[in-house]
Amino acid sequence: MPASSTSNTAPVEFSAPWSRQLALITLLCGVIMFGISGALLAKAPEQPPLMYQVGIGLSPAIFLLCALCAVRGYRLQGSDLFVVRPGWRTRVSLAAMESVSHDPEATSGSIRIFGNGGLFGFIGLFRNQKLGRYRAFATDLARTVVIRLPAQTIVVTPNDPKRFVEALQNSQQPVDRA
Image (cartoon, rainbow, N blue to C red):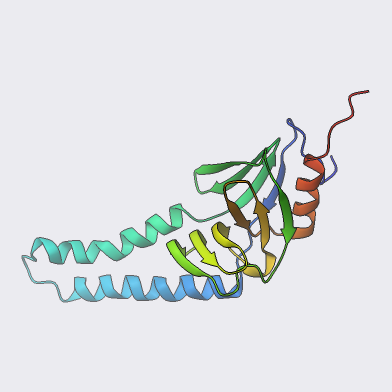
């Protein structure tokens, strides 16, 4: 089936490749987080207090939680975008989509309001002058696609941004049932 077809029955899937920046941030954070836990474990007294035990397990728990929220890909199906995660998906309705565009500079100057700024992804609520407040499900900011909806703006980073934009634009075309 052609890549630009997003009928209700044929989903179009895209991967979410990692940028070098994301890979380095994730690696560095992992080394630091597991290093902290390892150091605490190595220096642990025979009967460590409860807070000390929590400190040992906190970094690996945060790392695992972020890994479970990582973006693995995107699926366009009908008027929905599914953000594919390890073991689950986040659904975003695109039925009222106003516009979609590929803009590698869209996230420049962003500040994080709430979310993850580089451990397994750039995921959560962000804000900048260009987009205002937006929700990101991103892994490679050079592949940024901006989806504008009436109540929110979504940022995704599919492996083929141009094909993704075409697929969304074609899904918004009225279907001729003649």
